[in-house]
Each structure stands twice: as structure tokens, then as C-alpha cells.
Amino acid sequence: MGIGISGSCEQCDWFYLGTGYPEVTKAYQDHLRDEHPEVWLRR
Ligand SMILES: [Zn+2]
Image (cartoon, rainbow, N blue to C red; front, side, top):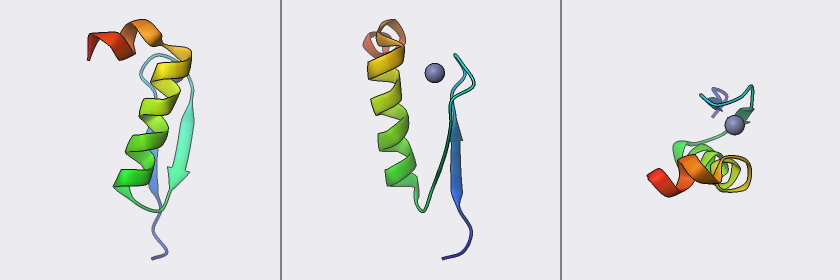
């Protein structure tokens, strides 16, 4: 470990730093679902 995986949102300035892609991906999708439901539904 040691190197974090970061994720950011194209719709706003949301930023997330996690330890693995699954974690970051889940956090990003949770964020989309909560904050950008239109984008979430379009996926
Ligand atoms: Zn966002």
C-alpha cells in the first residue's frame, strides 16, 4: 500500500482518496447517485 487511488467528479469538485479502485469506484457511484441522479440514471 502507500499509494492512494484518487477519484474526482466531472460534475462538481468532489474528490475522493481511497486505497483501491473498487473502493474509489463505489464511492464515486454513491456520490453520483446522491448528488447527480440524472448522470447516475444515464449510465
Ligand atoms: Zn459530483
